[in-house]
Structures are given as C-alpha cells and as structure tokens.
Image (cartoon, rainbow, N blue to C red; front, side):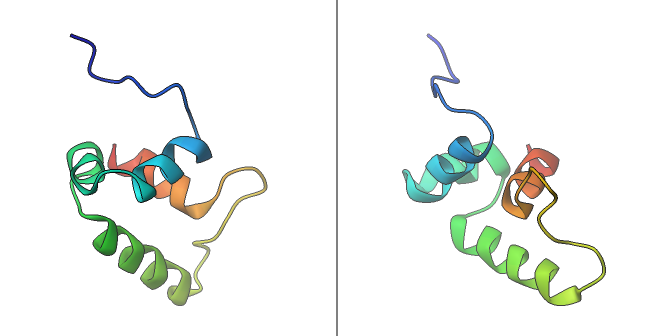
Amino acid sequence: EPYHTSALSGEGWVIELLTGHPEQIRCELGMHAHVFATLISELRALQVGYSNSRFVLLEEQLAIFLY
C-alpha cells in the first residue's frame, strides 16, 4: 500500500503537514506541529541568517532538513 500519497510538494506539502492530521507531521518530521512552530519562531528570533530565501520559506527549509 502506498505510503506517501500527497499530490503536493514544496510549500503545499508543508502547509498540508501543518494543517492536516496531528500525527502526520509527527510521523513525517519527528515532532508535533506546536514544536515545529516554536522552532521556526526561535530560528527567526536568532537573526543570524535564518529566514525565507528568495524562493523557499523557512518552514519548507526546516521541513526538508528534518525529513
């Protein structure tokens, strides 16, 4: 049975993870959505280069790293 069934990629996939079933993001990224959101906030607060790039949001960058 197929495991990765989302037709989305990139930013759409990250949004689907954040707004979808709570266990989906934990299964895919190893953390719950509230932890992911807190980590994003902490990275943005550091102000040492952690931000959206020209084409990729910080949320997507972190999701790629964690995946």
